[in-house]
Length: 144
Image (cartoon, rainbow, N blue to C red; front, side, top):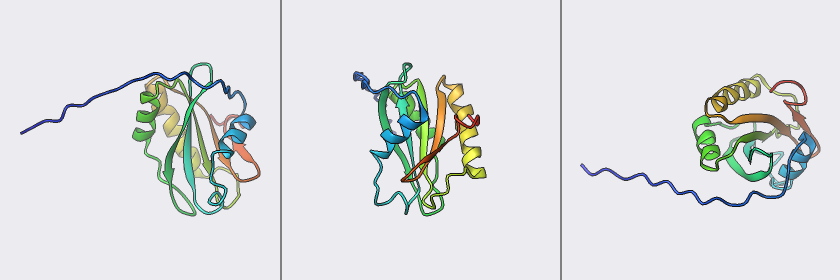
């Protein structure tokens, strides 16, 4: 039986000079990277990856779902954050309905990701639910 060798590569890139220090700046930046044609059609989850100074390392498109939900793979989310050597993460997903109120599933996955991230020294700073016009911030509402 032949085994495959696992190779890990790390080439550090300089983080962007964009600092994200409040929920509105995060919303505006992420909205610029969202497909406006599908924001009211299909639910998506993206992860904003930040260094310890909250400078943007990148945005990862974690999942795309249907009209009422998307599947979040916590292992995949953490593997991407660790590979990027992120210190902080912010979750962002849209509600195609435009209703910004978090569902029970939104609250549950946020708490699950927060616990899992803590185990690998990642800090979940916020979780935004967005629409074309505005957003809901878990952090601003004391839920992270």
